[in-house]
Structures are given as structure tokens and as C-alpha cells.
Length: 119
Image 1: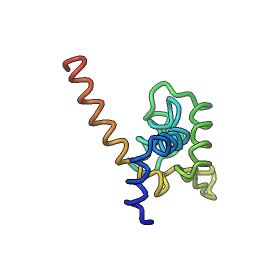
Image 2 (image 1 turned 90 degrees about the vertical axis):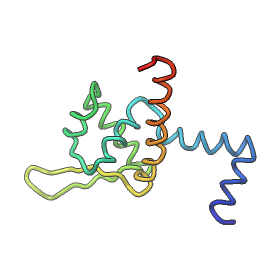
Image 3 (image 1 turned 30 degrees about the vertical axis):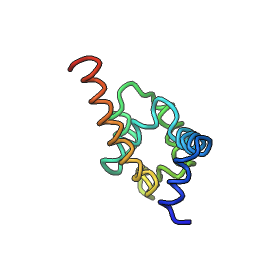
Image 4 (image 1 turned 180 degrees about the horizontal axis):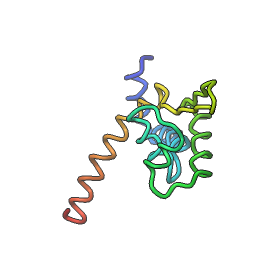
């Protein structure tokens, strides 16, 4: 079965659809994961750069979330053998594929804001 026909089968079955949504949520769940992914869409970043990009995230929480994203194959951590040690984070190909999801979320968010708030 090819990818598009498998997707169509999932869309036709409520149980499979919910399971696929839950699989996605298990990877991106939480307040900080999507902002981290959003920041990394714009390229490799060091820890402090991510910390500056994401308002109100603590270093401890950023470290925890990056580790979870790395375990789930969304973020790649590269350590360079320099003094001082340089560490960069970037999205994997799986992480980069979330860009489509985020773009749709942005469109929906702007439209929803317009409908609800009128701004």
C-alpha cells in the first residue's frame, strides 16, 4: 500500500485517525515544543539563541524539551570539539516536515483571531 492510499484509509476510520493524531501529539505535546521547532525552522541555533527567541522559557525547561525532541527524532544536537565546546541544534528531516503543520496552524490562528477578536 502506498503512502497516499494508507492516508486515505486512516482518514476513513475514526479510530485510526484518532490514533494518528495522538501519535503526533505525543511528540509535540507541551507548551514549549512547538515554539522550539518554530525557532529551528529558521536554521541551526545554539542554546542561548533559542533561549532568546522563546520568551519566558527557563534554561531548565529548554534543556528538557530539547532532550525530548532529540529522543523523538525531531531535533539533532551537534557537539563541536572546540574550546569552549560549541553545541548546535537543528531540525531533522522529520522535524522539518512539521513546517507544513505549523504554516497551517499560523493561517488558522490568524483567521481565528480575526473572527474572534476582529484584529
